[in-house]
View 1 (cartoon, rainbow, N blue to C red):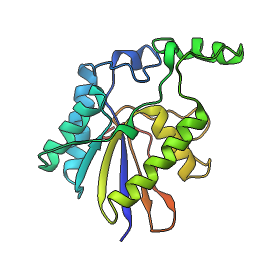
View 2 (view 1 turned 60 degrees about the vertical axis):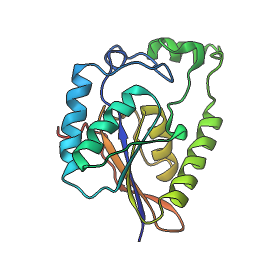
View 3 (view 1 turned 90 degrees about the horizontal axis):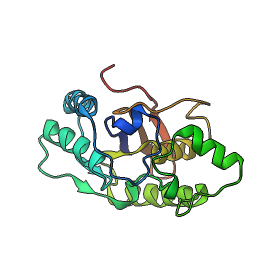
View 4 (view 1 turned 60 degrees about the horizontal axis):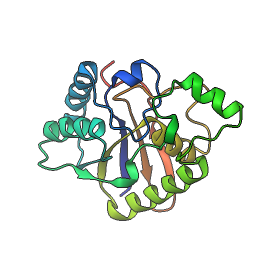
Length: 192
């Protein structure tokens, strides 16, 4: 029996609207984010999921709580490896400012490198495969980490160029005992 992981992105924040790098800054969901999370919870509550795990950041924890409640689960387990990529002193910057910094060769102090993010993603996948073998788990996380995991699992096929994962979107991956694969790729917000 395969291990199935639903990678659910948290609901919207004001920094998502402003296209600002959030990283590990604990930015709260806005009202739209709470509504997106409630809709996602309703959709997922009609499915067969056994556990909900979450990044420690509040926007992910709150999204996870909505989903756990809809599934009739008492607890949400916190998983540190689901934390968003740190953008260091660039957090709060616009995506455009971030791109300009990268093109100018300016390194963000304290930022997690792409190589470190990739290594952490593989570590997370290994841990999920071992800890939740044969189970169906929803893992609530963040855009940059989900992008990296999907890129690794799909061997670069997804996400497509310029494609963004909507808030409260879920892409499902599975581990068959030997390798990870994409079960359902859907970057759209659930319920839309």
